[in-house]
Amino acid sequence: MLSIRHVSKVFDTKDREVLALHDVNLDIEEGEFISFVGPSGCGKTTLLRIIDGLTEPSEGEVIFNGQVLSGVSREMGFVFQDINLLPWRSVVENVEIGLEARGVEKSERRRQALEALRMVGLEQVADVPPYTLSGGMQQRVGVARALAIRPKVLLMDEPFGHLDNFTRETLQIEVAKLWQQLKTTIIFVTHDVDEAIFLSTRIALFHSNPGRLAKVLEVDLPHPRWEFNVRADERAIAMREYILDYLGVRKDVMV
Ligand SMILES: Nc1ncnc2c1ncn2[C@@H]1O[C@H](COP(=O)(O)OP(=O)(O)OP(=O)(O)O)[C@@H](O)[C@H]1O
Ligand SMILES: [Mg+2]
Image (cartoon, rainbow, N blue to C red):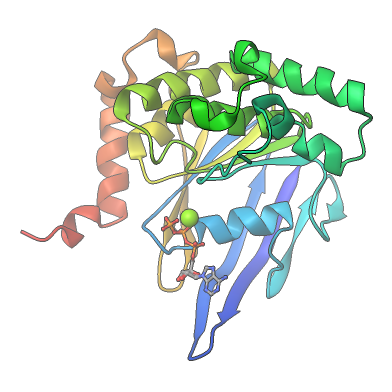
């Protein structure tokens, strides 16, 4: 469905060139839940932005349903790490933004935005200003905003990075349920190895300097995963150990 071919990205800054991504190749199947995991600065956000068309690759291309992508994709929804809801718009008006940009007519826009809010359990706060919501609720609004356009692919960049553990685990289960219900392809960036194991069908591991795709792992655990204790599962524990070793996380820890 989605094919990333020989994608490289060089950023030209005033004093130097940064090779953010080097020759990334990856095929993503329809309906997959794939996570990008790797150290800070390995190019995860850059790759997500290239997939969405927000950033141009320096080399290579992204092919989506047989066509080379150019410009911002209309069929992908993006959940940013910093949700940045507009304070002068109500919750539902924030969710309507992507629909507005796509020229959807007003009453239809409202209907689809309310439906997206219902999916994340927030229809009752549709008319309040976003700053009256908790951090977890605001993050859910960000998910609703991306879902409102009924994306073929949902791109999520560390969506729960700022949240406390409680809220984070609740939202992980909600995203897993949404994925099962909607069968949307999801590409999810996270620093959190347990989160990646809980959610994903595959995990792509990245190395930095230069940013590159190092390995792709299948997560061989049954679904739905909220019905058993994934963290305590032996296969999950072995996988977490493998990933942490592979990424050299322990070697970097200062004693
Ligand atoms: N617009 C930009 N201009 C210059 N350099 C950039 C730009 N965006 C990213 N970079 C550089 O590209 C590299 C990859 O950045 P990117 O944000 O993709 O990493 P990341 O894996 O998402 O990191 P994190 O986990 O901290 O979010 C970094 O070295 C970063 O400084
Ligand atoms: Mg990032």
